[in-house]
Length: 442
Image (cartoon, rainbow, N blue to C red; front, side, top):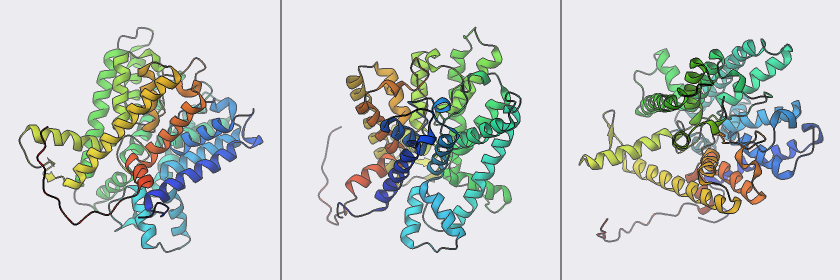
């Protein structure tokens, strides 16, 4: 395979880079900002929006004009749905036929199993995504309208935060963020539902719709895994965070419960927060790092190594300790190729985030825990941050080299570390000659 051959992985990477560069140029236009920003800050913001991360080095509400905020919103939508899925839908509307190469590329970018039914999948997916975002925007508008006398402002806030929540982006244009709403039950629930739906994955959403209509008799093993372990992680995160927030006497009981629930939902990849994360203990921050690292379901708007990868790793360990030679879940065995892929993703992700965090602590002379928190947040497309005194992300004070490392990390996390590595190195041909087996002591 030639080093300059445009493989599917390289095309996906190039598509994200192209969108980021175009977004950076648009954010640098004079009518996009109220004040001049540097090229690096524009690039950082465009990358954070396109990778639906949410880390910010400038204040979004006070820096960007309505046009600049619209550019960020479009980048979030394109990045969340996926550039390939977004453009393919409009090609389908124009009755353009997709070649086999186009279908393979689209399936790879959307984490869709195979190419059978891919066009129908896209046709169903995009309207459903827009419908969910529209419903979320409507309900958010109703509650924002009570706080903002200008209906246009309330409508814009509703649309922006509905899109940002469903795409797990974590961007907010509210002057004070969601801090004032930490005790507002409807706002917390609406955002949490949007976050969870976006994190399930498009394939799971489609299968649930077909199952509800009776067009699918039983849910697939993939969907069962995503639904079951999403609920378990949400519940476990809520319990562990509640054990700390319940001791916060400065908040009401309702606020403490909502903070624990909302941050359990948001931590897996959304990036919204209703309290300063520095209020949490180191133990809770480390647990949030674990949630961020695991992430959400494949083929959705979230990041991380994905729930399915974490489950497969756990099952491999459990099977070995149980003396079983097969990895089984829900009466279905998991293939050796899937196991190898999961181990590779976990190993590369753990090694990369650890290396970058240690490198940043040396370059920026920062404490390890907040630096690791920021690194995993960037890699997992989350956007949560322990922050700086100006209310921006922790990385806002990084040097240009440090910010570039975070930019690369955000891009790698969104494309997928395995796809990113394959895009750089390519995929060699497997030899048909099988060497003799070696005995290695472990």
